Image 1 (cartoon, rainbow, N blue to C red):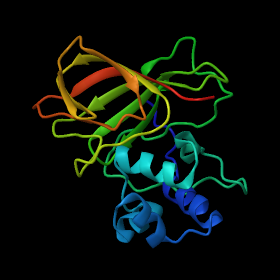
Image 2: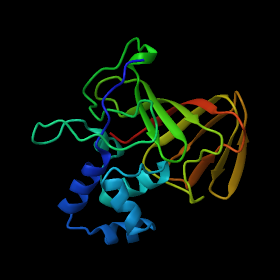
Image 3: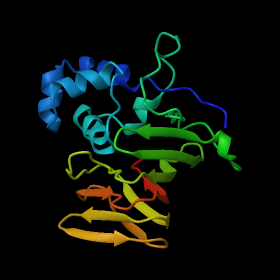
Length: 210
C-alpha cells in the first residue's frame, strides 16, 4: 500500500484557535482537558482521541473534515504531524473530489487516532456530506481515552463485521457482535470501546448536515 500524505492537524487547530483569539488555556477549559495536551496536539507531539477531536472542532465551530485539508494557505507543503504509527494517517477534507467508483485498498485515505482507532475512507461522491468509513478499534481501543461520552453533528450508521464493541448510548449500554448494526443521531452522547482481545472492524456511515 502506497503511503499518502500526513495531515498537519496540529497547525490547523492552532490557526483556527488563534483566529478566534482563543488561548490554549481557554480551549482546554472549554473541552475539559489540560492545556499541555492542547499544546502537544498543536505541535504534533500527540494525536487526539476521537472524542477530543470532535470536542475541539465543536468548541472552535469548524467542521471536523476542515482539519484534514492538506493544502496550506501559502501553498507550502504541510509539516508532518508526529505519530507513533507506521501506517497511513491522512483523510482529505475536499468534498468536491471523487473517490471511486472503485477504490482499491491502496487508494484509501487513512487516519490513525491516539485512542487505538483507525478510520479508512472507502469512497466519496462529490458534494455529498457523507463519511463512508472502514473503522477499526484495536483491543483496548476506545473513542475516548478517559471514558467521557462524545457528541457531534450528523446521523451515524454502523455495521460490525468482526470482533466486539461496547456502545454506550445515553444511559444505555449495547454489546455489539459480528453482524450487529446501529443507527442514531450523533448528537446523542455516545462512546465505543473494544474490551476484547482482537480488533473490532466495521463499516460506518456518518451523514452530516450539508
